[in-house]
Length: 615
Image 1 (cartoon, rainbow, N blue to C red):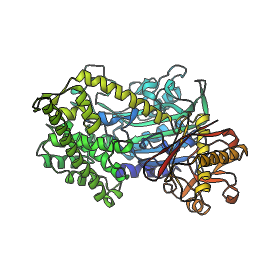
Image 2: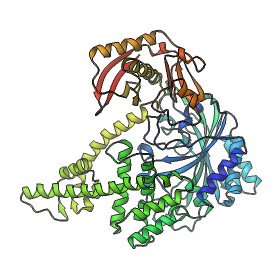
Image 3: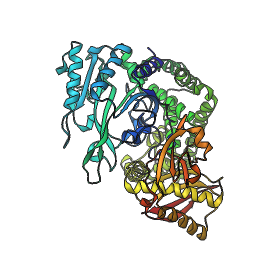
Image 4: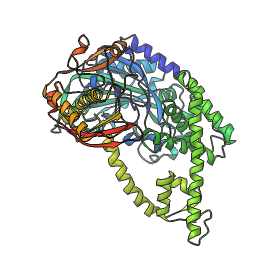
């Protein structure tokens, strides 16, 4: 069994059951400003799970490359154990109001036990046991009971009940944390048991606790999660039923491979073992004695390969910062083991993933160059940090040597200016007051957290009325700007919250007061005209022919979702705006009420940013 086999069998299994295969979305989302990376297969389907009709049907299947290393999904800090990865492939299937629990759960059990040949006696499941106003999922309990009885297994010992902290899914977590407009629902997971004699959990923080399938000790591994997406959070904090009951299933390919091979260490599966062997050769060290370091090298470099392939370059912001963090962490572990040359390790990673992701071979030189260049920059950063400290402490009459204590303030300067973490500063041989440093870090993290929360809940994350109004206003403003300054002008980014609209575009100067007034007048005129807004799924080639514009026009497949403000695909000449967009929008422009520009900024050479308010 290989990773390719797992994917291939899954796609074929659901295609036989009338599911249409949908494409793998880009790892860096092009039409979702609410997240840095695609972190689940369902992310592009949210509007349809919420009730929009999908033109391709009601049943879908795909494999999605995902990365979880940001915000609440920050798995970077989990890497080092037997199963956590930041980058992985997720296979998924969806029903948009078609079938539900009694079809989905037997199908997944059949795929896992028959198609993959995983021992059914090692499988356990969890269901939603209730949480506040939500009662226990007795329907899932009934379906699983029948499944286990049909194969001669006692369901009583195999079905576990958990509350919303374990068996509920929404992008914001448990029901009480969900913002207005967020969708979610109870879930059911499948776990694989590696056995009570497994040595991994001897070092677990849960080793002295009562073991259960969801205890994270390492014995049990979650290999499948089906979400019954059926609720929507209302403005008053209550929940209403979605227009349809949906299935949203996802399973990690790498974890299924662990179960198929009965291998409790993901880094010793057929997918990662060759890379571990390469690391052993490059460092002349054994995996057995350097487990954590080699896992971090393998996991973080694998993630780095895919992020670099997505045309991300290391920087101090957003996706670039995550890539920088991954590369530097892997370099720290590599240096600790005495390694010098990352080339062969990068090549080994690409070789292992090339069957499912052949584009890595085509972009190999670019990927390798990006990683090695950052490795070199990191070495220079360490050198500059040392120079800063040596110069400062010599000026104070002290000689800075290894194991010298520096001030927490200086350590924080190194952290913020040179990008070295506390651990990396210590690795250079310097100590400092950790409590004082922690206090400064806490202040810094609080500020960063506020920014991160704003980014997550900004954009279109909450689908609140005010946010949707702002989203429609960006389409009006985009067209108005192009009418004023020419069609070479185009959107380069946006972020929309319930408080304000932020719109980025290519332009080489500040708008004059007269131009701002004209732009506001045009947009408000179109709002007053109360023009109808709707979308159509049309062939991408046709969308280009009729003049559809947008930041994301090159990221769609054969058909694209096009929003029209006025007119339609048969009468595009009657449209004020035609854009590639995932939505949502108001139904008539009059719902936006009003538009006012409040600020404009320069974004560097040739780009501007406008802030505006609506309503």
